[in-house]
Image (cartoon, rainbow, N blue to C red):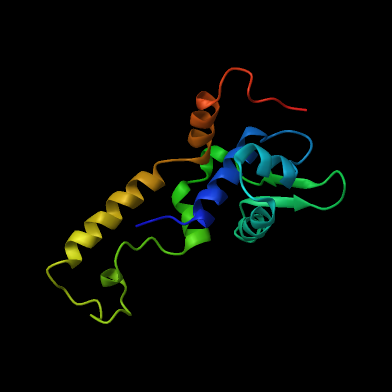
Length: 146
């Protein structure tokens, strides 16, 4: 299973918003794009999807921006990936509407195990954890707030 830029950039956006969780003012798209190295025009599309999925709120205007609705410790990466990418499905074999019709075959259990392993990691990883890893990976003083 390969996560597209949609999933990767969406997670980066949430990581940046986690860095600012609880602040009085929302974070502007330009700040998120610059700090997480995401094209701003593409980011706007992702933020709309994340807002519709209930992860963030958006405020219009010159003092506007985006903020997490939920505590980043409660946002599972699996939820984000599924909201942006769709169901986590490493093989069409697991899809009931596939050409094999969901029947048992030599590969089905293996693909089910692969999906369960991927889901296990993604369900046990939160946006807060990724934000901490991001913070730790930055050189001293690289993160600043205006």
